[in-house]
Image 1 (tube, rainbow, N blue to C red):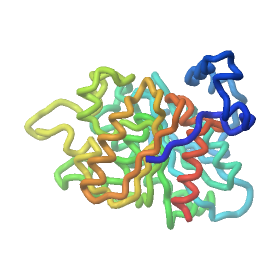
Image 2 (image 1 turned 135 degrees about the vertical axis):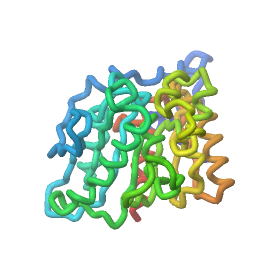
Image 3 (image 1 turned 30 degrees about the horizontal axis):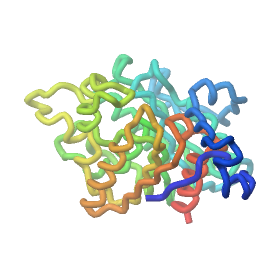
Amino acid sequence: MARRPPPGREGYDPIDRAFPFVLTGGSPPPAPAPMTWDDLTRRPRSRPDATIAYGDDRMQRVDVWRPAGAGPFKTVLMVHGGCWQTAVADRSLMDWIAADLRDAGYAVWNIDYRGVDRDGGGYPGTFLDAARAADALRDHAGRFGLNTRRIVAVGHSAGAHLALWLAGRSKLPAASPLAGGDPLRIDAVVALGGLPDLEAVAASPDNGCGTDVVARLVGPQTAAHPDPYADTSVPRLLPLGVPQHLVNGDEDRIVPLRLGTSYVDQATAAGDAATLHVVEATGHVELVAPGSAAWATATALIAAAFA
């Protein structure tokens, strides 16, 4: 389990590190509070280079972030969170990390989808939207100079669940309405504060999304769909057969750390290369905030996945 120092501690004077309590009057300094969404959204915002539609609904869109030059560019498939609800978040919440990756030379395919609170969302619409948006990357690769030989998926919160689910589409039950087609191959996943195990989320009232939203996402149990988790919850699709890196904050008040630990244990037991990276003094927002220790961890993992 990799751990990183809290943001800013690398800059302490060596004397501060050696005698932290002496220099603060005998008491340790208070830990900084986790970032809030306002802390992130007040930052200057960059804009994507293009937006494409893969359907008629206004949420069936993809923002393309493309570095200067001809390419082909290493390409990151990005999936936003928001508790699977459009009213909570859309793809624009990823603008800051998408811009940061673009500045580092990556192209970003930042997808949106209909949430459970939108007509056509839930089961199967949310999943079909994510799949269509991902597969559309191949259709537009030539236009935007996207290298499809190796794709790394990056998802945050509920979007980390969808990113991992996209990587496991080839394992979907044949009878599922979510199966079929020619799924985009994903070669590695970096999941930031993710909720991959929907059964565990539904049984965890302390998660920030609540438990009712899971039922709206997976749909009711019916004769045609007797096990709603069979084609929606990532552990049911294990092994995914691709490296998976879960980056979690130890002070995340939205996603309890045990959800990441439990999933990594399941994935590892199934034979997958899955690793949990716990970042200290980090909440949920820092995971998608350029300049944070958490995002530095994520970018290092993204770079390694393309190496």
